[in-house]
Image (cartoon, rainbow over all chains, first blue to last red; front, top):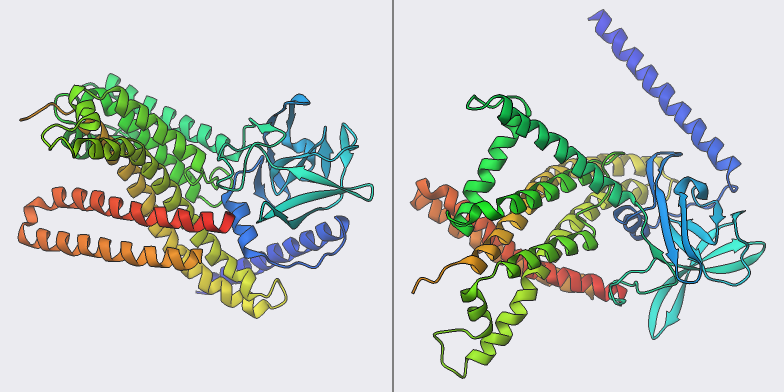
Length: 403
Length: 66
């Protein structure tokens, strides 16, 4: 009993000293940076920053994993450097700066080339084409320079559009995708090796972890949806989809370094997954599929053109709903968890009220733990739904006639 | 406005998924041996209902941007 108490006391002391040293580190950082500033917590901005992509990987306070930046501007050619060259947004390199983790390009005239120290980056709301739009400016030499966001091909739908440069970097999301792919390759090569060396014997180690998933996808997804005869051709595709989405979802749920990237909550990623599904489905469509799509048999002639329009739109709506479902589910889950954690900062009145921060911490932590468990369910469920819907679309495209 | 729209969409999806869940429960109670088939079909139907709500959510988000 005595030893237990003294141990607890020791742990409490240790925890306190760690907390205190963290505080010292924090205040030191603030004073040697750019002076003390009024800190106002903007929840919406903070959430958008955390679910967005970034050109450097934030590991913990002051520690970043530099990632390669590959940038192309039509008027300046290719630029390549590591994101550490930006010094976390304190430096501009060849007219590029880091704004909230994303590379932006300085479009104003007369900005010097090479590495230049820069001042603050601040945001303003402007009116453009009758819409409120947020633009960023960087301070340098007492002047303000306008910043351009990377080009996105959303046609301005999500606030982007074609700008003065293109970003082909290995960003946080790309890094995590590669990491997920690497994990999957290692796991599956190990499992496949197990089947070779222990042929006809019971599975062992990681093999027995993977086998139930494999059997589940085969027996609950591929065979009922595509059919006993043809499922083997599509099994690798459906398994790849399932495991890629699953590992991306799970890595996205880890709140610190190797995870924390919002891969499947990025609409570009889910868009490409949906495009692959669209291509596979329609390339494997047989005669009956196209007949039913373009000129529906067995209905009166005046209904046929209407059904052709509906079915033709359906070709695109199916992958579109796949894309939106995965994106919205994962993004919504991340926003909810971030909002619950954000309660700490909201209740603390931007760091002025310690009691409020404590209350917010207790409340937010309890709900965030609960939400994380739901998100764990959603991670598996969404991977399963994407796989089963893809299988059902492929099944519909390859189904033989049964009149 | 976007938040109100998202709220109405959540209402519709909630009713839809609730109906699917209640029918699936009834079906499982009537025929417990078919639980696996019922479960996977239930998830599939729920995903389709959810899709409609998610379109509304995306429109709600777009409203904020546009």
